[in-house]
Length: 197
Length: 182
Image (cartoon, rainbow over all chains, first blue to last red; front, side, top):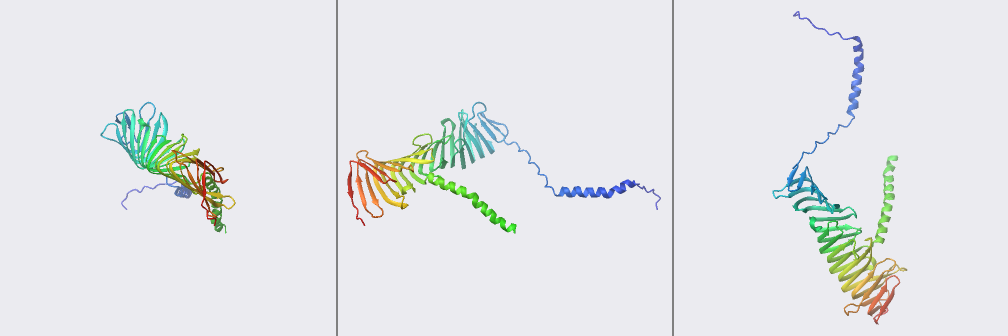
């Protein structure tokens, strides 16, 4: 022996008696926890994209554009990405969903794969392409098309390879020109109307 | 035992649940008989009367009375857009349709004709076709009895035919019978 003093810990007898009970409680608590679903981690808040870019009077905040900044609304767009172009007042949109307004009232909701929007004074001109779907909310009129052009100042939508559905009818045509709320239309090129199933 | 019955119970539930939908679809089909219109141009205005106007090589077809109409201009009027009320065809109109017999449940007469203006009322209770003289061109109508193959040709200033009552009304008429009475 080296003659070092060995330190001994004296455990109170009451604690010795409590050890089995404590281990049992720990096992129960652990096993209860195993049955639970892992807590879902909330997704991180979206990183601000082209945040607060100013392009003329078009204000891009995160992925939402409201035009104009003040006064009756003309156009509200949300998109997966919004990129301000080098041309002033022009933005490029991908996976876009927007609302078009007439005299401050919502006239049409449109979705598409991609689009461009150009500010022209107090008006907006927008072109959408790919899987375009539109819904007129008051009467439930629907439109699908390959391309969709909207000029707010003329209250006019023109579309290519178009299908209009509503009020028991389906109209198909190569081209169509519509009022923003889809209640008036001129179809040209291989026009076909059917009663909807 | 219960486990074996569950699929059958689900199938029965599905059939019971789908029955109203099928009945609704049938009712809709009766309310709005299928039709198809092809043209070079169409104009739509949901608040206008008529709401639908077609131009250029227009062809209207419908399973209702086996209707076929070709013309240069067609106006379609509809009741709340749920049901076509009547169509008016103009410009070298050529048409054919059948008149069903309620007793036999199948077409008993076939109508073929041409006119400058045709008004065709599709109202389910009183379907009617009316041919009008325009620009000096008098309408022509041929009625064929599908049982006997007997044909009746009518030229007139104005010709009207009720497809259910099978009642013919005409003014300033020239009539001919070409039937072979088989």
